[in-house]
Amino acid sequence: MGKVNKVVLAYSGGLDTSVIIPWLKENYDCEVIAACVDVGQREELEGLEEKAVNSGASKCYIIDARQEFIEDYIYPTMMAGAVYEGQYLLGTSFARPIIAKKQVEVARKEGADAVAHGATGKGNDQVRFELTYKALAPDLKVIAPWRIWNITSREDAIDYASERGIPVPVSKAKPYSMDLNLWHCSYEGGVLEDPWQEPDEEMFRLTLDPVKAPDEPEYLEISFERGRPVALDGREFDSVTLVERLNAAGGRHGIGRIDIVENRLVGMKSRGVYETPGGTILYAAHRALEQLTLDKDTMHYKQLIAHRYAELVYNGQWFTPLREALDAFVRVTQETVTGTVRLKLFKGAVTVVGRQSPYSLYSEELATFGASSYDHKDAQGFINLFGLPIKSRAQLEARRAKED
Image (cartoon, rainbow, N blue to C red; front, side, top):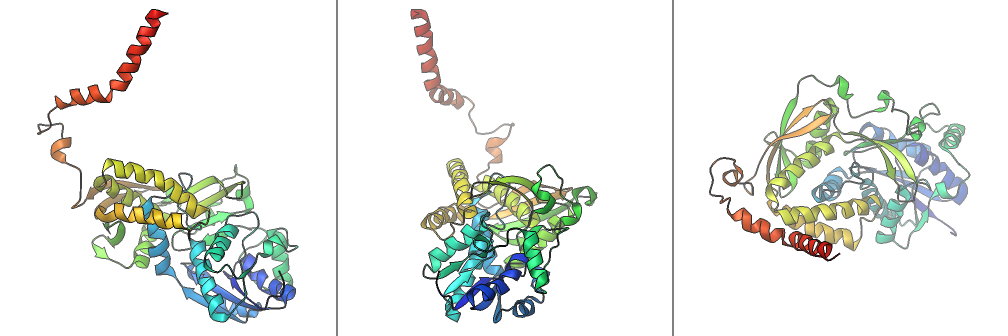
């Protein structure tokens, strides 16, 4: 790689990035600047600047990107309906591009010639970070310690930190890899590496065990304007506050837990456990409003692109022409996704129990089983034409059977 003078590290204060600061200084004899991007880590940010400097960083940036994270990354993904492999709401996936973007901004400001991250050589995050670097700063050198150092396990990293007096938020007894932000909390490693083992209930941070959730349901209403949530129970909130309140509500009722064996981009399967309480509620509400306001062809085609959008986000291809083009399509579909959805939260489940919109395409007069202007006789001609290919093929097969 050659000489590195100044490197900006995507810093979280977790195990990996905690040991990377001294490792960079020991192996590159360079200045290390820590860049911590606040996407909702909450108490994890406490004392982070002091910890980074004590670990050897010359300075530490704490960048509040919570609103941008929600409005420019979370909401577009939700409006696209993107869900990876039918379950994962992409909480870590779309956090990496914004973190890497802010990291690049710090590198430009500081005149750094390199950036570094703590993602392992087995995971998806290395791709998400580095594709963002390539898109926004292809001239910067990239240092990925996990691909080149002699540390081979999380236990080795814990020993490395201990030898240098660096406190880390894990232990050999509970070596979970945890990622927390405004949207979710994810867990990997430890006993979770055995897909037969049930997660330890004490591990969860955002949600109550559904068994222990209240015995009475909670109702709430979410209002949307052009696909974006703007109000909760009739009160308007900024995006950060709204998501936080939904997280609290969902957490009380044990909503949003999933346990999935997913296909990583790098080819292997991995087991991940996720909590996304507010996000699970928002997806359910948004989907219900689209069912009311989108025409059949648009809705069905949008379901096709949702799958591709989820792959793009999961694979770290946020800053690409295709993602921008899909966003343009989604924005058009959301022009009429305005209205209010009522939901019931109970024992780990979120159920849509009401929806209304000034753009509703639902007609009670047409759908009713009672008297209406719908002429049932019209259905005969429609069925005859719609079934013509089926009838023609059956007639052909009948003639050929006679000939045989």
